[in-house]
Length: 306
Image (cartoon, rainbow, N blue to C red; front, top):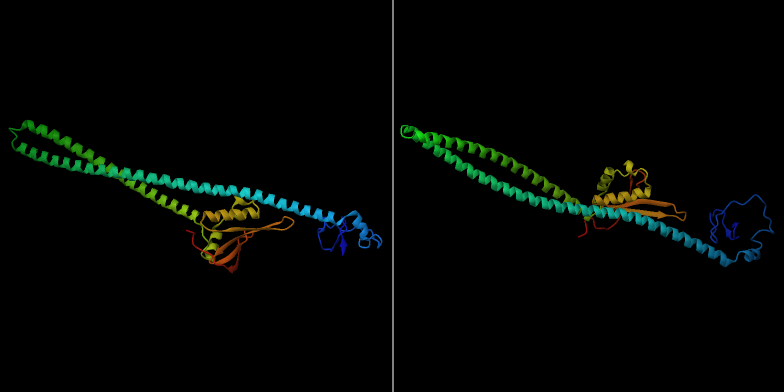
């Protein structure tokens, strides 16, 4: 049995702090304490110098101060993590804006495609007309040559008209080839835009509706692909900070991963991550290569909420 050097309260030798006043238990000096000077034999002297009410008041003030420091630390920590949540919300807003922009682009491309298709149809009509004209001119030229004596003047005019028609046919064929190439390009661009729009819509739905892991294998594969422990950008982060990084990255991939935090009276923080995989409660040690500790089964919904 020992005594507090500050207030004289009795305490065991293995106690670090006095329960009455909170003073740290320091080793006693080598001086021999006589039975006459022992606090245990003179309770009246201790009572004269350290009233019981004073010791209790100091302990209460110490507990209040400790509790205030914990609350302040939690408030600062939550303020910092609120910034990360705002960034995630901003990312969702940007994805929604991209989807809206791509939808408008798809509508514009569909309009251009319809216009090009109409233009190609018109060129086909003109080409057919010009080919019919060429055929008629060739027939007229043949008839004119049969009556060369009476149609010398018409031959030159018909040959000039035929040359012009052939030139027009060549021009229309070139324009039609360009229009077909443009049509193909627009079709490819439209397909790419539709594919990108579909991917963005899927990503947006994933972020909006995170879910638990369907199996332990799915959780293990996701942790294997995650680089929180190996990315140099996170090398200087504490274990608690890495745990919250893992939580945000899981949310972006459409999964639910929580952070479990605890601390003792000396403000030593202990943290880990938890997840539910295949109906089993799992703990993830982010500071030691992401090992999984499988716990008891729990009843939870594994599909996204409506």
